[in-house]
Length: 361
Image 1 (cartoon, rainbow, N blue to C red):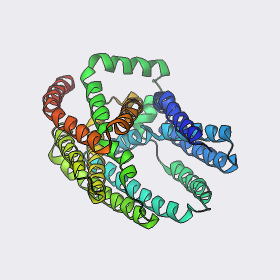
Image 2 (cartoon, rainbow, N blue to C red; image 1 turned 45 degrees about the horizontal axis):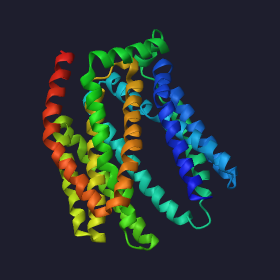
Image 3 (cartoon, one colour; image 1 turned 120 degrees about the horizontal axis):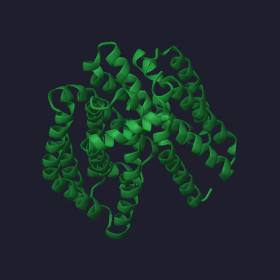
Image 4 (cartoon, rainbow, N blue to C red; image 1 turned 180 degrees about the horizontal axis):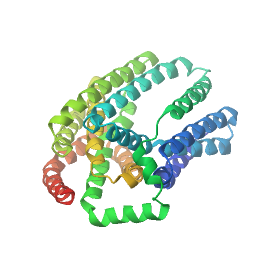
């Protein structure tokens, strides 16, 4: 396949994600969390099957990308909403951050395992990974069947309609614009914090496969450590106070690109990725407290869509800047922008927090 076709497949994946992100969350709020999770795994299986039978056919791969995006959509927001409602129902609301951090740690461990497996199968046996995906998805379907739907959700199902979900979200936007401003600020600035992760590999020298895998594994281990301490940090400080600190540290790390050494690039990648991994569960823990139960999954899907839109805007701009001004200059500039944003962020986030407290009271 040509690079153009590969790029088109990536675009199809993201376009599908944006289109169906919010509708998938609405379906979770209207019907059940488990139904969404079932659909997520079934579409994942279908996507893997299409990739196996595609044999280089662009249109079959395009269809596989659509189902793969749907798999992410139906899980995005739903699993977090299910976890939060289950924690509330079990009188474990105060433990939600710890639970979500644990799940993030397990996810990072799974990514590490996937990195190792991909390295083993990449030469001629990459198709095996799709068989593994199908097998794992079947096991997950069984685990979903064993999950107990929260009573809060079952009671909500009797009265909530799709129309009411839409009206409730609109009402939330009108009555609490500060909530949406908070979501948008995190996703937009957070996207800038992720840019080194996506572009750093172009600046690495020609390393052996095992060396690249080692870097990825170290990154995963650091991310696991980061999410493990997130619950402790989140209990001590609110996400509004932590975010400017994380942004300033990321900006400072970006500026270190001026040293222009492969070792420094790796350190910047590891540090910025760990900082973002640490902050995410803290942000979502605080966000959950302001979301209505009846539209929780939908609101979380709105948050995910904001990230996708930010990626569509910022990712190509950063790519253009790198092509035009070079890697180092771009990230020195981006780091400077992040540091300059710290003071305005502190002021704006303080105002948003006051407004949210007023609404909550």
